[in-house]
Image (cartoon, rainbow, N blue to C red; front, side, top):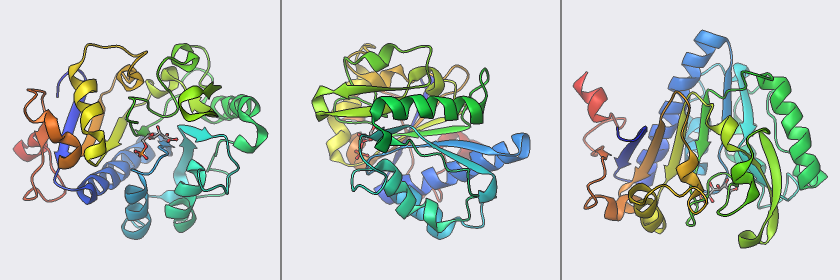
Length: 267
Ligand code: 6PG
């Protein structure tokens, strides 16, 4: 592990999804044992869909799903049944397929308009997670080709919000309003796991891991959990140019069933 981050490289996207599902359940079980519930913040975009589908299809007996409180890291400015909705993607792949308890799935109500949705979701986060100790057990995130994560895009005001767990902003690069959790609540998480697969992520990963910190330019560099680490689950295609970069990688080969890290293999 280097710089508070742990980068695991897997042969294929399916291996990344499998490790994500296993980490989801491992962290979830620990949370349920220690705190009688599992507060998880889901990622949007397309990458996590494979992990969500795997959880729905193969991990039904791996967690007390009734004790899972589901939140979202961000949402597009669309209704919940829109093709671009992060909630819809997670609902179809995952949330409709396991016995989550009513009232424990907290989507961002983007249909209210971005500003109102952000205000309402702030109230939900404070109510459900507490005013002071608002912490997720697990935050799942992705990374965009411009280095954004959640809807924290380069050179936006959201990057500087330090007193509010959720906010909205018009994002020029995607020509739309976005609602996003902000760094304070993301970085208070016990575990942050970032998923990136495919050669389309090669360039940005190399840049983000090897460039000097510039959170304005590469917001994902702002993921610095107060007392945790960021675990990156990437596949070989996304790792592309990292192998020659000298960056610390934990390469999981196909021979490692379940994608055990070097540390796990040693013990
Ligand atoms: C979103 C996500 C966003 C996503 C990245 C990567 O609303 O789009 O929250 O941060 O994780 O853009 O997206 P892909 O997984 O589709 O590459």
